[in-house]
Every structure is written in C-alpha cells, then in structure tokens.
Amino acid sequence: MAVDFATLGDDIVDAVGGLGNIKTARHCATRLRLELRDEDKAATDKVKGLKGVLAVVQAGGQYQVVIGNDVPFVYARIAERLEGGGAVEEVEDNSNKSILNKFIDLVTGLFHPILWPLAGAGLFKAFVSMFATFGWLNTESTEYVVLNAASDALIYFLPLLLAISAAKRFKTNQFTSMAIAGALVYPTIVALTSAEGSLTFFGIPLVIMSYTSSVIPIIVGVWVQGYLERFLLRTLPGAIRNFTTPLLCMLIMVPLILLTIGPATTILANAIADGITWLFHVAPWLAGALMGGLWQVFVIFGLHWGFVPIMVQQLSTGYAIITGPLAGAVLAQAAATFAVWIRTKDHDTRELAGPSAFSGFLSGITEPGIYGVNLPRKLPFYFGIAGGAIGGVFAGIAGAGTTTFVFPSLIALPAYLSTPNLPLFFIGLALSMAIGFLGTLFWGVKDPAPVAASEAAEVPAEAAAASAPATVGTEVIVRSPMDGTLVAIGDVPDPVFASGAMGAGIGVEPTSGTVYSPVTGTIIVTMGSGHAYGIRTDEGVEVLVHVGIDTVNMKGEGFEPKVAQGDRVNAGDVLVEVDLGKITQAGYSTTTVVIITNTATQKGVAPGSMGAVTHDDTALIVTV
Image (cartoon, rainbow, N blue to C red; front, side, top):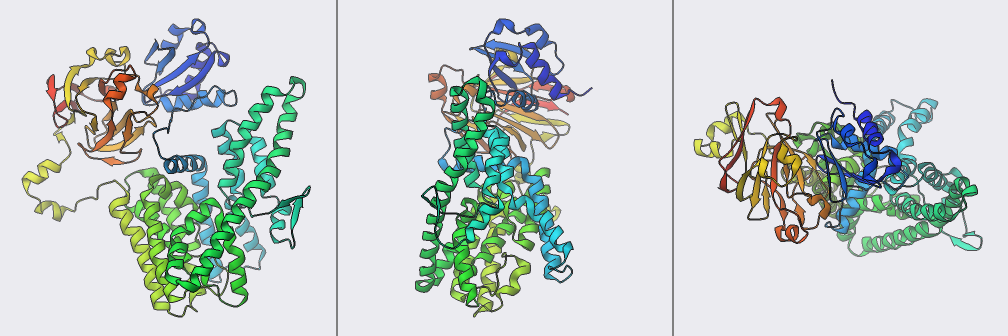
C-alpha cells in the first residue's frame, strides 16, 4: 500500500508534540529536520513506527526524521500546516549565488505553481488570435469578446496570481496580498493611465503605470507587506489585531506601491524609451539591437509600458518604427523554447515547452516559455536575447516598423509589410529564430543528442566502449563520485546511512573537492545548499550522492553546483565543486556517501574494492 504523504506529515506533527512544539522545519535530500521546542514531548517510538519513516536521529539540536526520496512531499504537508506561524524555514539557501541567479530563482519559483494554467492560457490566446487574424472569428462579435476574455484573463490579472505565490514565499496573508494586487489592476486605477493632466494623492504627485500583466511590482509589494504585517502582528493589541492588520496593510501598501514603484518604473522606462527613440535617428542598427535584445527584459520588469505612448504617437502618423525590432525578440524566445521542447528528455518540461512555444510563435505570448522554460535554465533565455539583438540590428537597418498596434508574432507579420527593406527585415527574423533555436539546441539543454544507428555503426569500437553507459548486461556500474578511499557503509559516521536504512551504499573519504556523477542518468533531486544530488539511470536505478555529513547546515557555503534538477548527466560529469577545507573548519565530516535509494527494487547491490580509488573506479555494482 502506497504511503499517503499528507497523512504521514500530519502523523509526524502529532507525534512530535503538535504544531506548537515545532520551532522550525526544513528538509534535506532524505530527512525532515525539525527544531523542537521540547524534544521530550516527541514520541520517538511512535514516529519510528509510522509507515514511510525509515529512522529518527536526534543530534545537533535537530530532530531528524528520515523519509528518503519522498521527503519533499511530506515536508510540503508540514510546511502547509505551519504556514503563517513563522516556523517554516526554507531549505534552499542561495547565499553562494549571484544577485542575478537569486532573482531568477525567486521569479521562476513564484511562477512555478501557475505554469500549467499560464501555458494553457497562452495556447488558448494563440488560437483566438489566429482565428481572428484569418477571419474565422469576428472581433466585433460576442463570441470573440467572451473567448478573448477567457484566454486573456490569467495574463491580464497576473499580479493577482503572483500575489498568492509571493504571499506563501514571504509568509504573509495571501488574501491581503490579493487585495493589494487587485487594487493595482482595478478598472478605475487602470483608467488613470490615460487621464489627462497631472494626478495627486493628498497633494503628493501620483504617476500611474499599467500594472496589468506586471510581475515585479507585486513581488516587491508583497515582500514589503511581509515586514509590515509581522510588525503589526507584534505591536497591535490582541482585541483589534485580526482585522486591523489587513486594514492597515491595504491602507499603507496600495498607496505606497502607487507612489514609489509606479513613478520609479515609469521614469526609468520613459528615460530608456526616449534614449532609444533618439538612437533610432542617430544609429538605427544600435537602437534595433537594444530594443530586440532587451525587450523581453523590459517586459519582465514592467519597463515596456514606457514605450507604449511612443508607439501610439508614431502610429498616429501611420508608421511606428520603434516596433520593428520586437518581432525578432519575441520569435527568438519562442524558438529557444521550441528547441528545449525538442532536446529535453524531461517529460514535464516537454509538456510545458510545446504549447509555450506555439503560443509564442502564433500570438506573441512568451510568458509561459520565459518563466517556465527559458529563464529557469538561463541559457535558452540568453540565446533568445542574443537572437533578438541580431534581428533588431537588421530591423533597424531595414527601417522595419508596423502600421497598426499588434503583438509581435508570426500571424502579425502582415503589419510589417510597409517596411522599406522588407527582405532584409525577414533575413533578420530568420537569424533571430536561428540563433535562439540553434544556440539552445546545441548548448542550452544538457540532454545529449541521440546518435543515429547509421552514425553509431561508424564509431570505432574503442570509442563506443568509452562513451557507452556504464552497464554490463543486467549490471549497472556505479563509479566513485570522488577521488579518495572507499569505506564500507557501516563505517560512515552517520547512524542512518551506516545502518542501511536509506539503502545499500558505500562511503568515500575524499582527497579532492570535485564531485563527479557516478552514473549516466537524469538529475531528479538537487538541494539548494549543493550538498546532495539524486540521479536516476535509464535502467531505473536511483543513486543519491550526499557530500559530507550534516553539511546541509552549511547552507551552501563552500559548494559550487554545476548541475540543476532535470539536467541529463553522463558518468564522469562534474556535479559540484566543494571546498573540503571549509567543511572541516565548520566541524563536519567530509565523508561522501553513495546510496542506492531504491535498493529494495533491485536484485542486488555489491560494493567495489575497498581502498584508494579515483572517480573512474567502481564503487558499487547494482544488479537490476
């Protein structure tokens, strides 16, 4: 009978003394790590007896419940129950990441819960746009109004959805966050963007931007709301706290966002727009490169709204040259998404990338592809930027532009037919898509390209043997992940690993800090701290590489990951670079453990020869 993770999470909470006894909760690759207010209240024997619990370890002030690979599902239930009480501690620590990577991780993490609805909405929008363009759907009809609203609502009201995921991330009341987001896209607020004359709020100048479909303003707003809300909860009298806290949050945050983020974004956007407009007169190719390369970045930060008045003004004269480079920017991102769809072996990514690329090509809706596919993998997004920049150069030289306001896409290309040098413009579009597609196809996804049978026949036998998966008949060879000395699993200085509760395995006392993949397969688990990696081979063997003992507590210090979840790796590829000295200085063991976490489903697991090894030597032999 399968383990019910929600029930297991509830049972663990009850057995350790209830929610009130849990001070913080997090998880690593295999264990729940709870900090209890009073460990004496925990019924440890009861926890050990729960179906799905492998062991319990009490060490270093932590109450560790060993679950195995399914620990994220159990943790999700516990985090759900603890949410709002300040007891959840995120396991992912990004202290060793750059600001850019932290930003990308934050944005893509907030989009993760809505990726599938966003992809569905984008595809829906693509079909509605296509039907309207081809005259199959009258844009004046009620049918079009209804279908357009149904397909556009999610993207239009995107701040409301992001408010929910941001509230969970920043530990705020999600309904208060939604109220704040709702105010930003409230019809009368949106209408103020076209109001004539200056606006004020109690005498303070009010500069309004459009917050529909925006991303950054609500994320920043909810982040600030979290601090304000926690301050109010601590200071307000209990008799009025429950209703006064959301009241004050809405009262303070909505004007604050409108008075700060709106003006800041609008001023910056207008400055950029004015600069690029001037550049179109001085160096059209450079202006095109900037517009094409940075357009999707402008969209992410909401800066693109500053260009809309210029587009409208130019269109009033019959031709908007500033829109010329945008087609290449959009199509390059769609092409990069399409390349991921072709190349990746990850089923979920393929399911998302396919419709996302389709909606990008047909309707210019790139949000699903950017936030769900390209931006998390970084390189596809960068190749899309590069393609957009090159296409923008050609668009600028060609004098490309539109005669009507359209969302750049394949079906909107007729709006560009008044371009003075149309062939040059189309050459630029082709190059944009080629760079986004080919760059991603060959370098943007780590899945290895399949080798055709005819090509395989031409490979020398020695080369084929060197590149083949490490399997011999029904045996899967698991290599040592590091140079060092193999030790029996029972000698590993961790009672859970040593007991075999996690599965059969082996330890390595490392002599160098480079950690290699012991098998060929797909990364199914990575920890933000960089200390543990789960890999599933094509034969279904699940291998856990855990660098050091209790190194999750280092929160990424000394670890430089080289792979991400979903990546395809070959045996011998580098997983992470580790500073062994920092582990030792922090007081932890550097012993690295290799565990077959699904040992029970294998026919047998045998260790290699104990003693000195390199990362090419056999550590375990798994009979499947």
